[in-house]
Image (cartoon, rainbow, N blue to C red; front, side, top):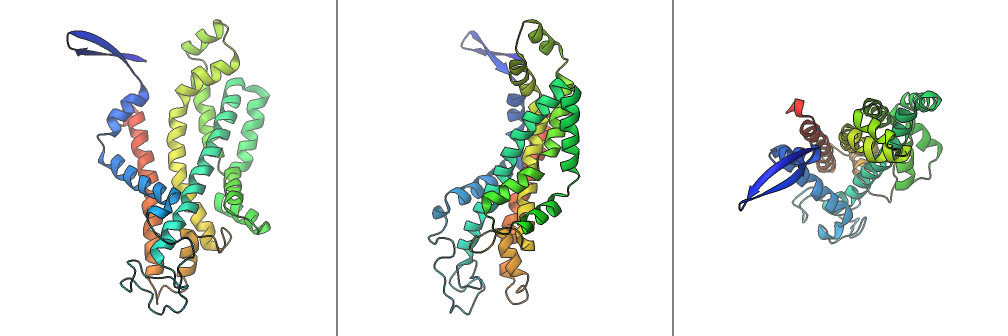
Amino acid sequence: MVEIQVAEAGTVQTRAGSLWYDAWLELRRRVIFWFSAVILVVATAMALFPGLFTRFGPNQGCNLRMTKKGPGTGAVFGYDLQGCEYWSQIVHGTRASVLIGIAVTVFALLISILLGLLAGYYGGWLDAFISRLTDVFFGIPFVLGATVILVAFPDHGVWAMTLVLVVLGWTTMTRLMRAQVIAVRDMDFVLAARMLGASDGRIMFKHILPNAIAPVFVVAMLNVGNVIAGEATLDYLGVGLQYPDVSWGLQLNIAQTFFAEHPHLLVFPSLFLTATVLSFLLLGDVVRDALDPKLR
């Protein structure tokens, strides 16, 4: 912790600076940060409040007699094969992708923090057990493992997919968290807290966690984009969400057969999916650079 002296009206005020405050000062000067943040705010608003962007619900307002599907036929994004306004379907498709991406990352991050703290702080047989368990799950390919599980249990929805992806998606962050805890646990301020009689729980969550979480947080931000891409891939392969659910991956699955006749069915959800995933990845990159002074 450093102290920043601020002179104002003949008096001196002291304000505590921190790694996160310095990172914010760096981030707010970055165009990529604001570009990514705006896209993600819009995507999150579409997921949480779709009624602000469209008057139709999912799979509502459809006209099976609609013959002209492309843009400019009464709807900016045209219509899908069921005669539903495609813009409305894309808006509602945002919810599944963003919800699963954020939920999986949050739950996986919590698991990683707990296991990484226990393994890195205590070491010994507990560290060996958690490390070997992590290695086992790390060896399972993300998409292939999810495909096998989802095929075995075909009756699944958003939360079932979230559970499957959490089970397969916590290993990288756990490894990083463990390494960070090992690097911090023997520092002077941790040893001082231990000598003053602080409990293990207080040392781990009050002293070690705040000084070890930054790199794990960056990986978590990058992980959101990867999970969204993985969820769309599973939907595209036909093992993820199923109709009447609406998602970008399902729209791409349907569009692949009719791309020649109706290219807009593939183009528009692809653009939204790419923009959202790319925004999470870019945001993670700039946050990593801001948190690491050596990368500025």
